[in-house]
Length: 387
Image 1 (cartoon, rainbow, N blue to C red):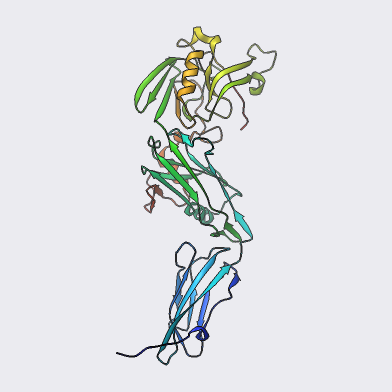
Image 2 (image 1 turned 180 degrees about the horizontal axis):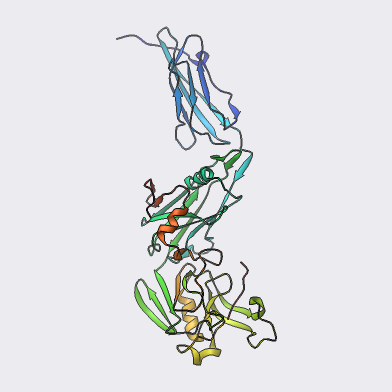
């Protein structure tokens, strides 16, 4: 067996400067004095190796994978001095900070219990608009969703700065969902790099589904598939008809002042109102609530007389308020109103078909929240109360 002597290879190789490398440039390692490189590895702080290529003559190595800005890399080099001597050396390199950083605000805000209904979408608001398709792909690669139990979902670019994530169907009851924006320093586009990592964890409660039938004037409340309560209601009368479609509870107020001037009704109009309303559960940002309406008791279960909200007795509204949380699903059917907006007036995400939803992923793929992405092609406002 050939004897191999161990030599100090530091003088035999040239490593890049330790600090300040432009992350847009490659890392280069070269051999000197007739020596050859036998192995080069460059490893980031997350343990991942940077892809590189060794020249045919083994005199140089150059990275071909993208580097992260403001990141420290460990370089390990093995070399042969040409006279039977071999050895290893290591070094470090820190790339320069990117000129601009892209940060992300994740929602929902988990202050409090962090417990939400099964209809709650995940949201991302970027610190600046991203228009380029390749840059959008990098953003999606930086977003990871993991849930227990696992589901299949997808991202939807609402506009250049906002993304939503939802599963094919509502989240499972009693699930734990964690999502992150977590590749700091990653190049998003020329001169733009990912900022600090952020994460959010939410839990879902029971599967609460509320069906408001504007034709029969009744509300049906289901918990985990079982009917728990049916409540006589009144919805929007002609000219103020309640929006049809699936909505998600946005918030709850034990008492809220509702004024007709906020929806453009003149003070001298017979339709004007200025009322303190109890037990109000909000479902749109434009001011649609489910709330107590003791002034319309005789119409509840009979006809639609409101200005767009769903009204019920005070006792029923208090019960509904107590049994409902942010993220629960409220669907209106058989109203004369227009369809719920998919975005911008609350969460109308569930009114978008799955086939249409997945077309708006920059990566064109679905995500399995067990922790892997399915690389297959996808087949598939002002706070204005109304009474």
